Length: 359
Ligand SMILES: NC(=O)c1ccc[n+]([C@@H]2O[C@H](COP(=O)([O-])OP(=O)(O)OC[C@H]3O[C@@H](n4cnc5c(N)ncnc54)[C@H](O)[C@@H]3O)[C@@H](O)[C@H]2O)c1
Image 1 (cartoon, rainbow, N blue to C red):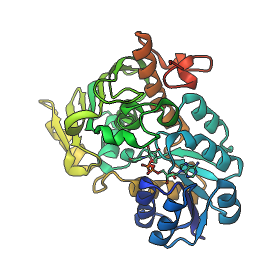
Image 2: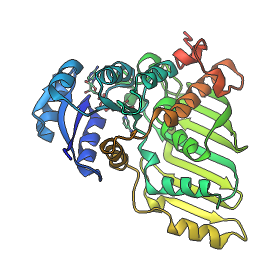
Image 3: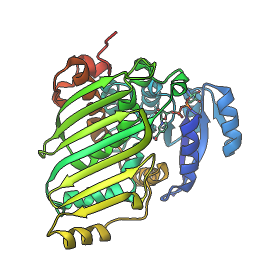
Image 4: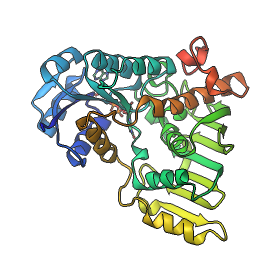
């Protein structure tokens, strides 16, 4: 089989992680054949650093001359929709950096622009789903060995100084779609939903506590799940001792993850409930291991799926609940009442804009 032809749109910071991860990803061969950026100062050095001869200034040229099978969209959030839609309409699958879009409306439109059974596909980068720790927890939770999920904690307590917000697209509703709820905590909330499944209601507060930014710099939420579990969420960029902490209390064990921007197996801890030590620890020991969370880990699964004509992860059905939770947090915080996912549809202000079009 011929190597997949991959292109990258946007050659800034995260694109460099993508280029390196593509060369490290397991699975079928893929060649980074072309890159595109509107800024020559980014495009030129990127092309020389990664040895890519085909460099383009717009999407039309990238698609027609580069002939990619897959485009990685690594541009600022508000540009994802147009670029991804352009790819899908040209019959090319897209892997879009988080947040996939800046609104649920844009997200649903991209999902609707996918092909039928053969693609093209729309997938989101949520790389923390693909480390072995998360996959192991998910497998054990669905096997029933941990018992019912009861309560969870999802803390993204990070630190970004005021200079971080100098990048023009950051901290603006119309370019980033939100603050740490949308930009930082989204990864951890995605992991929470990956394990706990369907959420049913969220109550939240969002504040601009310390940074000069148009969006929130802090949000807190509690979420209920169809399983009956409840979770507490903090999304902060104001926390000098930075930490990412997820904790799941099941009937038969507590599972914790403590790390910062990426985890390995050693960052996970399991504590069985009395009487369940043997079965819980045995299942934990024999489940998947050895893969840190990383872009390369997700890309391996994406390339595998594409080579086999399957939908690449993370597809719209899995990513939408995460985007809906982000929208639900803003809707609840700004209206002062609990919000259910079913409310977040066309006609609702928080469906078309994460801030509900507030001034
Ligand atoms: N998955 C992760 O852990 C992770 C980490 C960091 C950033 N990100 C996401 O990656 C995306 C990019 O972030 P970044 O930090 O690399 O940004 P960046 O500002 O460093 O790079 C963005 C690049 O896109 C280019 N660009 C802007 N508009 C364009 C357009 N219409 N067409 C082509 N190129 C265009 C810019 O010139 C720039 O070179 C964001 O969505 C961000 O949230 C994800």
